[in-house]
Amino acid sequence: MLGLEDLEIGIMFWARQDARETIREVKAFGVRAGQLGFPGELPLEGAGERWDEALTSEHFVAVTAVCSYAGEDYTDIPTVARTVGLVLPDTRAERIARTKAVSDIARQLAIDSIACHIGFIPENPKEPVYKEIRDVARDICDYCRENGESFTLETGQEPAKVLLRFIEDVDRKNLKINFDPANMILYGTGDPIEALDVLGKLVVSVHCKDGDWPVRDNPAALGVEKPLGEGSVDIPAFISKLKEIGYRGILSIEREERAAEQRAADIRKAIALLERLR
Ligand code: MG
Image (tube, rainbow, N blue to C red):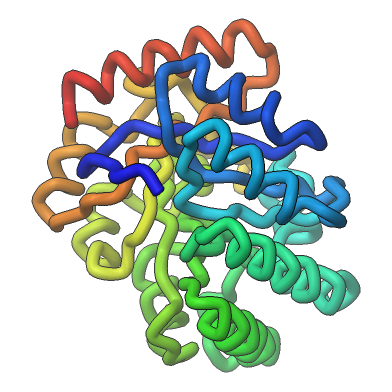
């Protein structure tokens, strides 16, 4: 495997059926590492072999396997609560199975970290669903441990202290955090730089993403994602805080803009910004 530099710039990208073509598009940005997302709709049959061959031949390093689930919808907060992650009883079993399947693929690819949005963790640990999700997290952590992996929760859907208490309650050493500073702003759950003081020791990967706070008069609204450096995260402060806490992993640029050309332009600008800051 390629040796990566500390704070090397990478990209969060989603697998398509053609693994080589997917990687070549990412490499066209001049990066050699990233986080490999498996969309919920993507068939996983044969994916381990295909991606192993493609990553090796393209000399590309995937540091995280990101798992999303069919039927997830990030339109607004109630829709996220109704569709995202492992909280919902109707889809829980199939999504746990999907997460374990992605964990098995990651093992084939020598990726030692799995990430997902688990869904909204209740602030009140006495709510019955809290214990259910805690047990789900334990189950997945134990599965990932057998595969030599950590299981990482992405930040954003709850305040840092709620996430920290949950992780302590799950009580598994391989439960970690994929830190997305923009999500904390988009969901209005707290200042991301302050959150790093609370969660820093658990952070094994980060998304470099930016965004603005939701409008105040609509509690259902999410904030709006922005090109890196143009939102409310304070990217220079974010990178300097990562250095302060001793983070050494990749800086994984995540841009969810739908228009392909705009997305590519935003990623190139993000790379230039991070080159100056890292
Ligand atoms: Mg993210």
